[in-house]
Length: 333
Image (cartoon, rainbow, N blue to C red; front, side, top):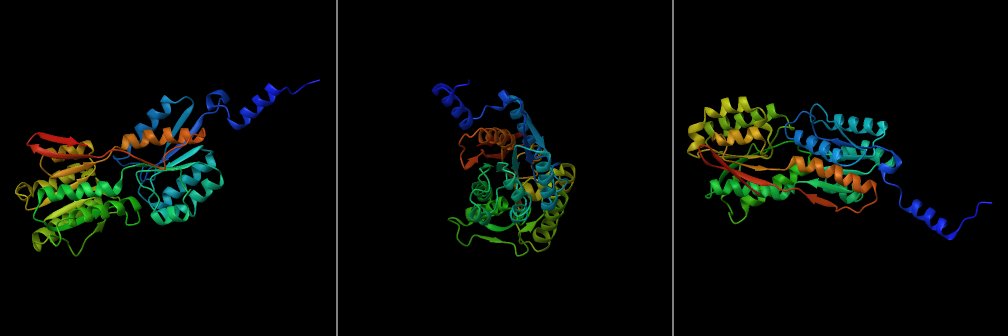
């Protein structure tokens, strides 16, 4: 007759409380990374970080899948499809907090799938109403990022001026924090010196072509025709993601850029952006670490799956890049 001894009871109890790692069970963990858009140069390093982190862990798969454009409906559909496919964890760069919260995110929570955000978090309202909607945010401190953009603009125009901000999606909480940080930095200790152009801010919906057209519109209308705007602050890489068109268009205004009649400060430090900075077609860039976001997202989901505690917020570093000479760009964290 089978007899339950005290050591066997203890062993069974431990096995129930502390499940075997996936390497012992033979299960491959499938963690999904959902960017705002799948074809953005910014998110390519996120994919590489995700893939490399999964490879470094045993029996972990990174599923990187993004919409063809930054549309919350498309992002919502991708998340829903991945839930149906049986993922074990989800990392999402949120486009519209309220839209996905009530749909695919609710579906993921019902299925017991752990959720983290990267690059763009849920809105304050969403987090306030559902404080446990995600386990962690991984990415830039967007308010601090915005402050660095504003401070860099002030370095180039210490006497103040008239500025225009170009952002992405109006509903993106991370970009709202970034804009707030930028404006607060401009106004700090410069009371009355900075004013925003009446037709700004502008929102490009994370579309590089739209952003470039908006930049050229401000240069033509706000800078040249009215003479009001002298500083343009772009919260992300968007117009410089059309590097050849940007190069052609901005080269025509090189004299104004060189004389600092016009100051252009841009978010992100992708390789083609640093090349444009080196050529004097911007005055400075504040960059993020997208590779670190993708890598850390997989590592954090892995810890969550195995019941390990994780911080609520994990900030990745930023860097400031400026042109020191005709062929010298310096970047510092």
